[in-house]
Structures are given as C-alpha cells and as structure tokens.
Amino acid sequence: MNKIPKIGCACEKPTSDYTEYRSSELGIDHTNGRYAEVTIQQCKLCQRIWVRYFVEFEHFSKSGRWYKGIVSKKDRLQITPENAVDYLESLEWYVYGGSFFESTGTIGQGKLSV
Image (cartoon, rainbow, N blue to C red; front, side):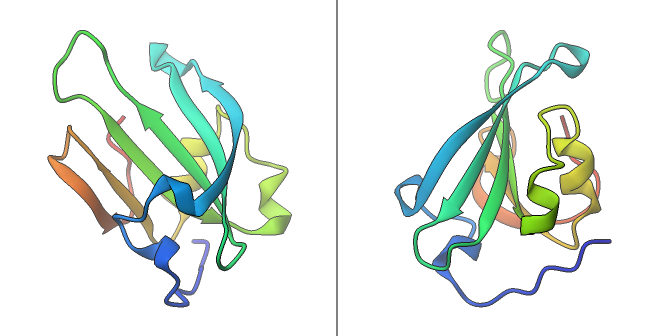
C-alpha cells in the first residue's frame, strides 16, 4: 500500500476547489466502456501532484463520481488512464465524491465503484 502522509494542506480536504490546481488531461480510460476522464492536478499551494478519475454514465441520473489521490513524483510517469483505478486502489487513502455518492467529498480507501 502506498503511504502518503497528510500535511494539512487545503488540497487534502474533500471539498477543495478545482481552481486550487493546475490541471492537465492525461486521457480517457476506455476500460469496460467507462470513458472516464483522467487528469493530473498539481496543488498551487503545496505543489503535490494528484491523479483525478471522473466517470459518469450519461444514460443514468446521479451516476457521476470522481476519485483523486496523491501521486509521488516517481510514480507520476507510470500513471496511465488505464491503470489509474489500480493506482488509486493501492493508496492508503484517497478523496472521492459526486452525485452517485450524494457527496461533495469524503476520504476513502480500497476498491473504487466504477
């Protein structure tokens, strides 16, 4: 399990705002027809790097869900849209939310519901 310490930065709060990050698209995960958007985000305050995984099934209401977890610099280059779920599931903790969970954000760990 990848241990990532919490340092008290605003980016660790489940409800942190996307404007607190510099973002770049990593690509789309087509696994099992999910078409999930995978983005790399860097916190403008502490400079930590996050991978964000967002999936929504347009034909189902309240299906939007996102997950984000901190990525170490050494792991960053290994992350692809296709292995982002496995990476997030390997973390000691991640943040997740969305209409599917009726949540603006919660700390979680383990299996992702995608």
